[in-house]
Length: 183
Image (cartoon, rainbow, N blue to C red; front, side):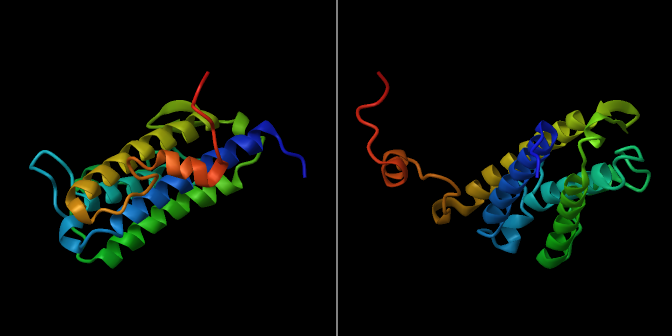
């Protein structure tokens, strides 16, 4: 199999989306249902609302993305900011459907597709730009999910990456002795 820059680009984007989804999933798993639906204040969104927005955005952007505008007529963006899921199970089903739209679409992208132009809200985007736009938007909101989850979890939080103060130990365990640092 020949590796092209296009295939590598799409593969890298898929990896980045997957890594960020794992961060969100691990953060959400640390919360009870009450925390999942609790906004920090009246001007912020709960994690459930952020998840609903991400899923709605991904479904809209990536359903038939090569042939239709990324802003689908069936999408009700304003409704995404209303917390109306009655159960964690229903929220997670919706969340997974949005991500599945994204991953199915990205796995179908060919090198020829990367040369195409597609509309998002009537504005022309190259396929690589649409991928990067979606990745940036999604990562922005994943960061919100992780930060709010961290606040809600308090002292019960289990770090998602290298724990604070644990870099030297992590580096030693994974790469051995680096010496005294940079020259």
